[in-house]
Every structure is written in structure tokens, then in C-alpha cells.
Length: 246
Ligand SMILES: NC(=O)c1ccc[n+]([C@@H]2O[C@H](COP(=O)([O-])OP(=O)(O)OC[C@H]3O[C@@H](n4cnc5c(N)ncnc54)[C@H](O)[C@@H]3O)[C@@H](O)[C@H]2O)c1
Image 1 (cartoon, rainbow, N blue to C red):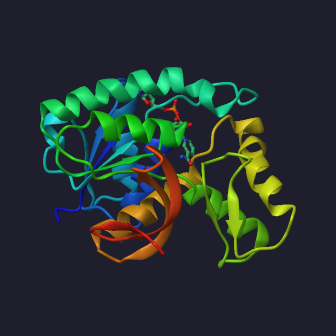
Image 2: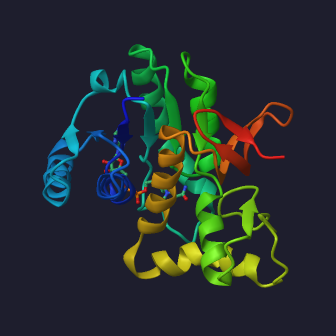
Image 3: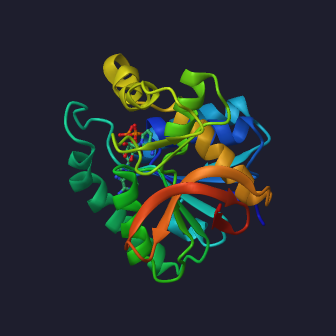
């Protein structure tokens, strides 16, 4: 693998993910793409200053052809958090469709990892729309799992189901209140700063590391369920191949 990562959408999450990948030395080359090229150039220089050995630059779709993994971090942090998660779909859908068209034009064949929300619905758009790859995954309940483990101080519990949904299922933990605390966490974080960026960037960097280095670590990520015809998060073994665990 080239250890080359493309990040599309370099806002709160995309910029923090680029920084995390650079600082953790996960990627050798990082291509940043955003409709706001000036802001992206500023972020790029700032990250370069923190990690001078990482080859990070503002690019175009033509730079993404040989990327091992492209991460979709578009979407909008401005969607009101008192609304349902699905309210962001109108915005994130349009962005995803534009990206799908561009990736089909370059005949992209690598992995597409979707971070944008609503995570399962946007991931399915990529899965249905990308013509040259079906290696499409969503970060799904990876962040919910990190939250459950942090709150419970129990690194054995994990979350499956649908990201930030009250129907999530917490495995290996019997605390009846944990589910509610996990679901509330996003709003608590967003209440003053208006976004969440560090937790999601860390779990996404770990997933990327596991794919690039074929680590076969267990992560809760979302993938297509052909029987249900939708994306859902499962406990998954993540390496060059991504497989449902058990
Ligand atoms: N899955 C998770 O666990 C998780 C956690 C946190 C945030 N998110 C999601 O991540 C997404 C991004 O959040 P954010 O806070 O970084 O938002 P943001 O508004 O800060 O950043 C979005 C970026 O996308 C760019 N953009 C918009 N349209 C584009 C296009 N067509 N092509 C390229 N770039 C484009 C914007 O210019 C902006 O820089 C949202 O959907 C948010 O809900 C997911």
C-alpha cells in the first residue's frame, strides 16, 4: 500500500483527522480537498508545521486515483443539534453525490470510508453510487464505542447498531444507564463548541491504521447488509479485508 489518504471535506473533523494521521505517523501522504481552498491551504500549512515529515498538500480529484483510502468528512456542523440526526441528510446527500460523480470520473478503486452523518445513509449512497469499488465502510458506531468505553472505563464493551441512535446495543456491559449516557454525549460535547472532532478523528485514524497495516483489529464500523439492504455497524475485523466478526 502507498499509505496515501485522501480527505474530502477539511472542516472540524477533516482537519483534525489530517492532523491525527500526521502526528500518529499513520499516513505517508495526505491529500486534502475542500470547496474552500483558502481555508484548506491554511490548515495544510498549519499541520505541516506540526509534522514536517508528512507529505500533506491541497489537491484535486486527479491526485486521489492511487489513494489507498478516501475519507468523506463533508457534511455540516451547522445543522441544529436539537433536530433529528436525519436533518443533516439533505445537506450531506448533495455533497456525497458530487463526490461520487468525481470519484467515478477518475475510476477510483480503493477504500471509501465515510464519516459524514447520518452515517449509515450517506455510506449507502457511496455504496450504491460508486461504480469502481464496493469497498465502502462507515465509521458507524466506532465513536459510540469509544464513548461507551470512556464513560464506563471498560475497554471490553462495544456498541453496535446505528450511530448516535437510541436503538444502539451495548455489548459486554450491564449498566442500564450507559446507553442513555452514550447517546447524550454528542449533545453535551456540541453544546458549547458546536461540533465534535477529536474523538471521531482518533477512532477514524485507528481504523485507517488497521486497514493500511493489515492489523485485523476489531472495530465497530458499518458495512452493507445485503439481506436488510442497508448499512449497520457490527463488530468487525479490520485489515486489508473488512469482515463481520462472528
Ligand atoms: N460519524 C461520526 O461519528 C461523526 C462525528 C463527528 C462529526 N461527524 C460528521 O462529520 C461531518 C463533518 O463535520 P464537521 O464538523 O467537520 O463539519 P464542517 O462544516 O466543519 O466541515 C465540512 C467541510 O466540508 C466542506 N465541503 C462542503 N461541501 C463540499 C464538497 N462538495 N466537496 C468538498 N468539501 C466540501 C466544507 O467547506 C467544510 O470545510 C458532518 O456530517 C458531521 O455530522 C460524524
